[in-house]
Structures are given as structure tokens and as C-alpha cells.
Amino acid sequence: MFVSTGFSVASLFVVTVYIWLQMTKIFFHLTSPAKYSTAILLYLSRKYNTPDHWYPSDIQKRAQVDEYLSWHHANIRANAPKTMWIKVLIPLFTGQPLPSEKLQEVMDGLSTSLKQFEERFLQDKAFIIGSEISLADLVAIVELMQPVGVGCDIFEDRPRLMEWRRRVEDAVGKELFFQAHEMILSIKELSNIQIDPRLKEQLAPVLLKMLK
Amino acid sequence: SGLQIFADRTEEFRKVNILMKVPALKDGSFTLAESIAILLYLARKFKTPDHWYPSDLQKRARVDEYLSWQHVNIRGKGSKLFLTKVLLPLLTGQPLPPEKLESVTEELNIVLNQFEEKFLQDKPFIAGSEVSLADLVALVELMQPVGAGYDLFEERPKLAEWRRQVEEAVGKQLFQEAHEGILNAKSLTADKIAPELLEHFKHQLLKQAS
Image (cartoon, helix red, strand yellow):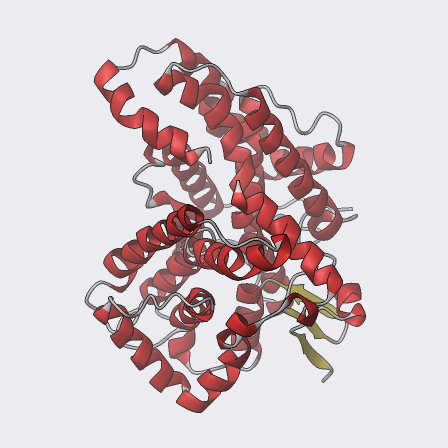
């Protein structure tokens, strides 16, 4: 049972900026200050006084958001984006075919993280901190849409996760959700882009190193 | 008030923390893992002096910025060096290949440069003129490679000065006490480590060593 929240203008602004940041992160990954996007999200939430549920004033609920955000970095965030690198971006820049064992490795790592996500963070609750959506759910879903965008549907065999995703989509607003993820969901079309060979040459070794 | 903090992996601890990670906090029926979440919770609960997690939005954002970056960087590379240098030889019974050590050291140096250039810059502390949780977390993580025998402060005077200032702010004695364990890590032998802990590290190393 969860509470459907009205979506304030401040919330809309913060959510849109955050999702935009995640999108640009993919392209600026190499120079990457956008790794601090959770810091930016927190800053914006405070500055624009977004509704309490995003980062609750109750210190235990807030601690649950912090706990998720902290764990997220070395787990979901360490694996989910790699699917995109391996399936689309690296082949695009290096001209090398997809290394299948690498993808399997990443998917295995992601599976482990998803199991922990469901057992420790989600459990039987509607959202990570309970009955209301928070920054934790937002941060999680944006990362988890990346494998979906490249054809690795991690929600397919995970009904509990799928239900959570539906609730997040509803809370954020289906239209906004899909607009924001349009770029991610059409990332496969990037494969058709022609890239300057000099740029390819420069970036290929860096990208391959990132895979390690 | 029933506030408990677990710093080692006993059976009781395992019940509190499915993730099996130290440290963990138990406050009545409320449990919490992840050191950063715990620090923030304690700072709020005990209303610690403002500088630890400043109420000024921009200073606070600097702290958050560091805390979010450090996971895969300082923390990630620091612990990788520690695991590789101290635990890998213990687990495999083989001496460590020099190229392996060289490459994890290089990875750490890259993030140390980023730390100095992006986060510290010319300021005494990460958030500015006062010590905060960011400095505390940073220094604690940096003690891991030091405990493994890699004195990263030796050729980095700016970092050494920062360390001195953080120690002073925290209190030298408290600092030494807190780091006693890690600073004696070099003399660690396999029999001193609980078997399930050894298994856990083996697993982590295999993940990281690739």
C-alpha cells in the first residue's frame, strides 16, 4: 500500500535535471565531474525545498536514503552502465566486436547487486524507504534503465523489481519518465553514427582500459 | 538508548547486517549499514557541531560531492591496494608479482592526484576552512594503503599537511587509537583472520584482481 504523491514543480525540476545529468554523464564519462550527480541532486532538493519524501527530515528515513545512495556507487552503479559500454559505446569507438565473456561477467555482477537490492533495500516495501518514493528510488531506476536500453532486460524475470519500477514510473509520471529515458532507450541507434577516426583512435585505448 | 555499533563480524553482527559489511549500527530496532550513512545519522542524532556537515548549502554540497566520488576512487583504489598487497599473498601463499603491485599503486596515484587537484586544491580542508566528515572519511580510507606499507604521504607535502591538520582537529590520541588495527596490518598472518572473513576477502579480491 503506498501513498501517491502530488508532483510539485520543484520535484519536477529536480527530477528532470537529475535525469538530464545522468544522460550527459554517459557522454562526459571520461572527464566526468558528473559522478557527483547525487551531490547535485541533494543540493537541488535543499535549494528548491522539494517535498519532504524525496529526502525525509525524519533522521531514520533519511539514513535509509543515505544508506542506499552510499551502497549504490560500488554496486548498481559499478555494473549497470557497463552494459551500455560493452554493447554499444565501446564497439562504436573501437570497431571491435562485443566481447561476450565480459558482458556475462557484468550481468553476473549486476545479478548479485539486484539480489541485494531486492533483499536488503526493497524487501516487501513499495519503495526503498517505505510507502513513499525518495531520491534513492530515483537514483536506482535511472541506472537500471541503462541495461534495458541496450536489450538486457533485467526486469523480465524479476516480478518484484518490475512492480517497483511501475510504482516509480507512476510516482514520477509516465510521460516524464519515458521522455527522460528516451535517449537511453534509443541508445542502440548510436551504433549507426559515424565517428571521426581520429577521435576513435584517441578514445579506444581509454575505453578498453575502462572495461577492466 | 540501545545504540550499538558493530565493528567486527561476529554472529550477532550477521543478524543485523545481511550485507555482511562493517561497520553497522543498531539503534533500538533500527539498523543501518554503510559507514557514510552511519556517520550522517550520528551527526544528526547527536547534533554535532555544524562544521562536520555544514548547514550552508554550498559547503554541504562540497562534502556530499566528496563522499559520493570517493566510493570507487579513494576508497576503491585504497582498499584494492591493501587487499592486493597484504591479503593476496596470504591467501595464495605466493609472493606478489611486482607488476601487479605497480599497477594498483598507479591506479591509486591517479585518484590521489584528482583528490589534491579537484577536492583539496589550495584549501586546508575539503569543504573549506574547517574540517568536515569528508576529511574524516578521506583520511580513514587513506590509512588503508598506509597500513599496507605504502606511504602515500611521503612525496605529497600538500597531502601530508592536510593529514596533519585533520589529525589535529580530531585529536592525535584518538586518531592513533582508531588506526591501531590498520597500522599493524603488515604483521597480519592468515591464522589471525576469522575463516569466513578470509572467504569474504578472497571473493572480493577475485572480483577486483581481474
